[in-house]
Length: 260
Image 1 (cartoon, rainbow, N blue to C red):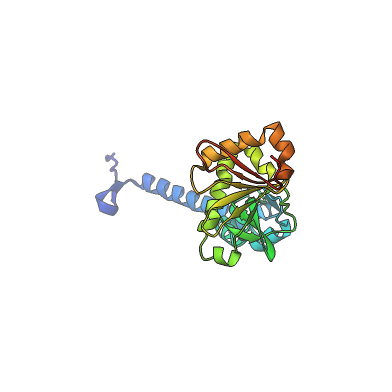
Image 2: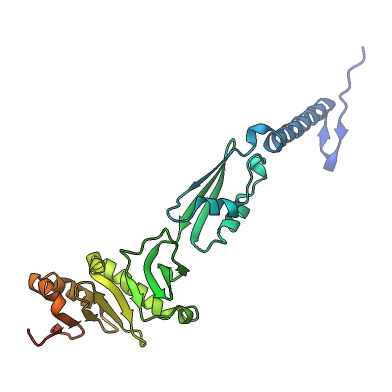
């Protein structure tokens, strides 16, 4: 009997395949093609992966319906036909939204996590406005309470939209108060900004003005914090017109009457 001969088939680049190897390669390619098409079918045609629920998390004052309107997704569409990036971009058109995360949850849920802008102060200039820590100014939503927020006075919104520097100074002062003694904020009815950028604290009890000057705010806030905690001073606040802590070695108190 003659000796069996092994036939090599030369394909790309001089690489040689036997008929068996070639057949195996074709089978693998067909399997891969079938798997890819099967997955695509499941993702885009199967009812298993059609959107059935949209979950919205993180809202405290924005209406859920408004977020859904911006998302522009409809139940019943293939989950994998929804672009999380495009949904996020549409939601970020709402200025009250600071950040958003959109994720597909298999098999049929879209999760939208929203971070709203949180007010740290408010303004009154014909209307009520909230201000977040970055200096963004927005009309106050009805659902937002400003009862515990400091009111910033002396600033006009129209001017701030051109130059926010005075507002940044006020926000910086609020941040310093929180670092030195957050309880001071509860004693304030507001922070008044003079035209030259000098801040004054306005106390709730009695309406006394606290002169801080333009510098050394950390030191002066510490002094006023200690000063207001004196029992005698606290009891006499309704009689005090002005407190000046801009001097190095003393605190000046001006009373509404000649007493004291």
